Image (cartoon, rainbow, N blue to C red):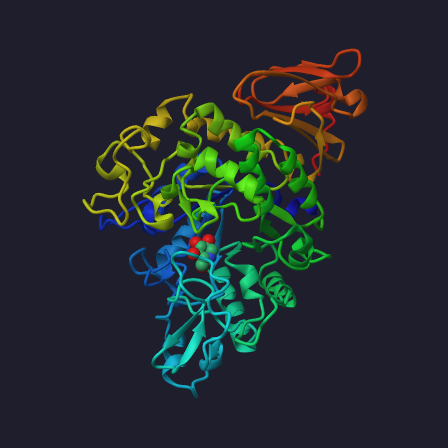
Length: 553
Ligand code: NOJ
């Protein structure tokens, strides 16, 4: 049954074990701490957790530099703790996705150590080498300004090795069948320990042809099918959510025309156009991005997000559009990163305006795809721009007014807790927001419930309706004789709009699923809506009868 595709209407919560909750008091978050917070997450209503890397790692790129794929970093706990955690999540109906970082390893990984020491080693060809420095060594850096090159000389190997990211992250030679077999083995291992799939890191780079002689980028898409097939054999309902910031023309290469490659991909096109829309109240490019990314096999799904653990990458916008977003949300150089993005969390970007922040989340939750939120979003946490690069938005979760936000009993948390200013834990924390019915936390819980009650978004087709104002976005979803209509006002002022749901008789009555403010059409079948600043209105289309007739297959 198509309803078995759980990821179509999931609500995914991304967290880092390291900064979520410390149970043993050493200043570092751990699995025991996370387990103590599972009831909190279940209460929030999320249906899946995406864990950022937690395997053994020197931690030079926040765990995205793994030195042992088959172990939990001892600072976070043991494999036993991990299994207790996946079991605890399952008992609460929460699935677990984990990061799969296989484009590269840490330079401390024994494979790389052996490869550099011994040219005859079986691991030599697991990495990408060149005796001469390739001509394009100063191109293709992912972290410009911080990373100097993509090829670095290794004294022991007496050769240059390729690294798409930092020099501590040598790229694996993913075309090597032994490397591919190892990737499958890693997936099989974690599947066995209770996960429902993977957020696959840096997918376009994994499948890219690598080597000093590669002049033109070329992808080996077949590899994706190999990963997918393996996973389906081992556990039919497990998925891959691909991190692939690519052009819409290649989306189908990633999903597979027949839906035989990645089940999910993050929609970076929509993400960037969304921020442009917030900055300018022009939803034109957003609607275009939604249209361009519309085509996908029935089983495929987009992952939608506002901010994640990286910078807000604006690289796909035009220069003019990018400057508009910078001017609105990251005017200061200290807020920008890698010449292409903004490194702040959402709440400070939107100047802590609760109506603006809520409209932004409501809009993201109503776009075609599955929403992915990040720990701390639900209480509108801030950032600490004094921390380097992306760490500014990776500070520990703020649980209470207790010292160090109740995150740890240790006086030195792994990253500093935000303790000053309006985003300090004294003002922004879970304990306080639980008690306040109007808080961001309780509002987020209601938003999640509303999204779950509108499965049309995950399953259905969308139509963007003309509201006569580019600052108002009206989307209708249709699925098996059910429809919802969702309207957002991106303006900071009230506006009056007329909308024709364009769905015949059924569109006469719109039932407000948020707060019961229903709307009836006029004689011309149009709805006149008075929208407050940053309003969000979620309507079910059709009268009560219609609701009763709803199909639930
Ligand atoms: C993408 C991850 O999101 C980012 O945090 C990391 O630095 C790179 N991939 C390298 O793994």
